[in-house]
Length: 433
Image 1 (cartoon, rainbow, N blue to C red):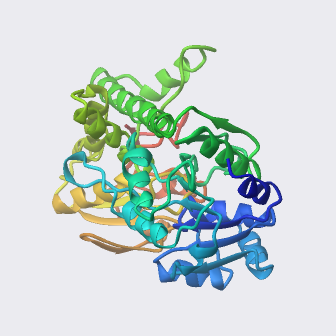
Image 2 (cartoon, one colour):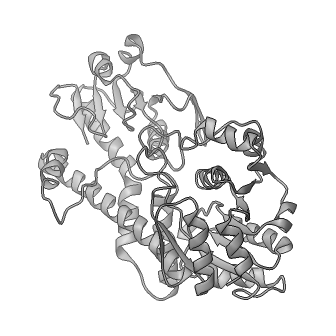
Image 3 (cartoon, rainbow, N blue to C red):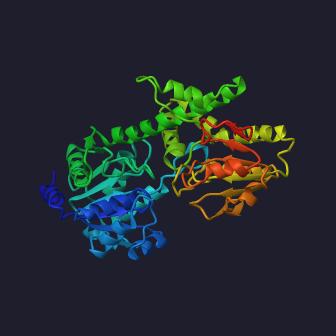
């Protein structure tokens, strides 16, 4: 282990670069800066860099006053040029890892970041990958690329993987109090990474290898996609049997052991749950193993917007209306409650399907004033009495707290409640998933 780097980290003298200033990178950068580290945020997105330079937060979990404070103090700066890496002691990579077609991971952003680091890396640098990826990426991909610099992993530089565990919009658990998992390519790499994160995070759990840390992240998110897929299947099953799935879940969760409540909906959104398990599915296939649970769960979840449209057609039929030319209001288009985040939101898929069925679709979302994505070009409509009364049905797709659901119930003609916001309320207007 480099004693020089160890002393720099412990004394908060290490210079840290965070590559990728999204919902993972920016909270990390701000929290290291708050602890007195000199932090350099690097991103190719000029808007993000400009916002940081102007002390404007664009991430829900980063209060504007905290960002402004560390920028004003000089502890955090941002740039689109990467030459500062020549002087950096610790580099944290937080770039996107999307999927290509046929469940193939797209590691373009990781490769680009690593090749840039390779140009400037100096001896005694710690490099940590946080971007979610398949097991083996750190060892099989990043290590060889960085070693093309002439430096050797474990001797001249240190390399680890530490999966992000950010939950956007979570008021209880933020980056500083969610246990951090780290795994180094060598014991020394792991120890240095653990020491680095201990400067801002209460609990750091070190595993034996980077591959084990990579697998940990995929286990966490695969657990979720499988259970969400299962409860969505249960919801469809209960509908066929005329059973209230929400009542069943509430009853099951009274058991103090052996059950964890998951809830049905339009599917899964964000980056982690829709994509991450499929990295594991892809990697397992390369080892001759097919994960039936992952594939089945992904298929069920991706089908849920189509299922919702089928149910909506049934709701309208009871009102002697056809789906074709009906007026539908989708209430909530972000992928989760109270978060300004549209990534892979199933609500967007719902709107596209309804448009394809020749419905006249509008939406309301207190966080999203307009939508210009793919075939969708809409503005959020106000939830006025006059507006609500014009729609044949209101679909509650996201349960934002800033919505007056009582007014919706009073003035809407019919409601298809995907999120159970009308729990315990009886009305002929309400149909639940």
